[in-house]
Amino acid sequence: MSAHTLSRIYDETAARLIRARSDDEIRNIGLDHSAKVGADLAEVMFLRIRELAPLTNPEINSMILQGAERVALSVTEAFEAQNLPEGSERDAYGNAALDGYLDRMEVLFSAPETGGVA
Image (cartoon, rainbow, N blue to C red):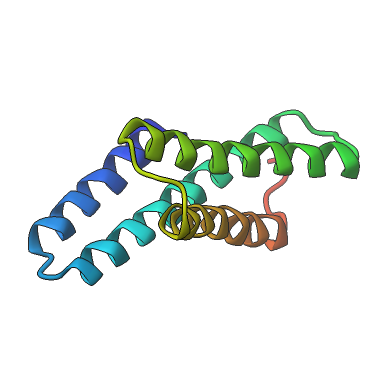
């Protein structure tokens, strides 16, 4: 993950949390934060895949799945580090992070290639 992007995500989340007025708002900010971190990992994984090109479709798919596993693991580790129990909240945050990751991957792999040799 890019340190600059993660720092920006954390700063934005912290600023939003300061202004939060309810538990629901705090939860929604956390879910949004998880989605943004997942999307950031997608960008890093996409760049890594591009660096390793040419890859076969199965190799690309495998790397995408490895990234998805990393997203899920990061949420699990974050909850465990805070001694938070398994359950629907952990699942909600995991799903938000995974949705952010997969949604960003879809956008990145759907974009037409541009550029060329000057």
